[in-house]
Image 1: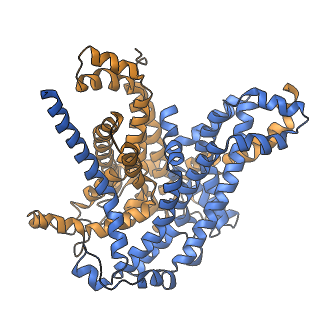
Image 2: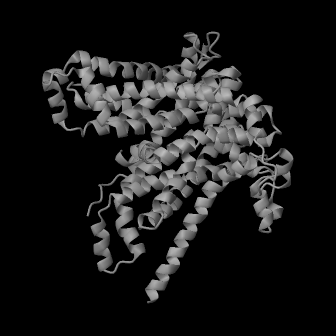
Length: 278
Length: 294
């Protein structure tokens, strides 16, 4: 009887801990949503409650004056390009490393995995100088190349792990039927690996979408900037229009939250893969 | 079968595109970075070779660099506190089946997938001295005398940022630790319960030793992760006020792209790389012990 009531108390304590951290995670976002519909005066007068005059003025400001639409498009364009090129090339390389028979496959894998330890800071100056030499500074291509190269270690780590457990029979059957290597890879291997490819795709997308450093260094023209860089530029320009900034921040967050709601299993799996398997 | 899977043409076709991009834009730049770090250059005109002078100057003449290094150490300590005991507490609560567990996991993990710049701006609003919730909450619980402009005060700014880092990544490390706990066979706990071991005893004698290996990797992730934070600082304080919140990463950006001392900046980049590798090697040495198995 006594242990039961102690268990009760512990259970209540546990929920107290969990619920308070849930509030700490979600309330700031909710606060942004509430205040994005206010005017600056209303925000200063009362940062807690809802505004009686609901208006989407701030969102219009963010798009018209803050150019958030342009930044949004640039971010999406870069992220989709990185995702398409990065995922295709890394899955091809992973397939060759884990399934094809050649002597240097282990070494190649280790060389790729070495990249996981390299912080971007150790390569930005050389990349800046190289892209300057190639005359592609201040183009989206520069950011795309750097991001693609950076996504390989993690992507190849996850994909080689998955490809190595595909049963041999599938390949044997395909080859017996006279299926060529390219067709087998794109028509059979890629479709059956859909879940890990989605995992790699979504973490590559998020990493590119969220990154500040590379686009900040490589893109200097305002119309070419991505959302994170654009937000920083807005912050410098409109120092007093807080509600407009709040709306712009929400525009940046919303795609991530939507993707997260649908794919949170894949995202978690992909982001912790390195730690748990390593 | 072997003929097809060993076909050199296909192997080259599959591996080379990725490998060449990786080689040219990730591996070679590291070596190039070592070279640049030994020059005094602005990349436009040919620089002068200075050997290890950049490195020596960093440690002997640059008080801002030393301050940034100190801030990085603070960041590592703060992250270790939040991401080891606190994340372990959350993970352990969720590990013992509890209603709504997967909902809590999903919510706790959310902050670490959101763009750092957006998170930074969000917390800049929270810390704002006029309408920020932090000051409002303080005065609500009667501690109004502590309210201040957190990010503008050189004494509080770095701690204000560390709190955000703690908040943002607790869920991430919790999920890593939870995944490790789920690999432990349930039968061990059942046997322990029959023998009358308390929950605390079970945690100390079963959970902790069995997830030690993952904790070691997690510690490396926490340390290298704290060395790499950039966007939060860049957006919340820009390294200010007066370099009080500078980290190695933001200081590297400042030296490279604000004052255009590329060689000097490359040297800071090298130090970051060395610290990342060092933390991995050291943790391997410190935690070196055979895997525990029952």
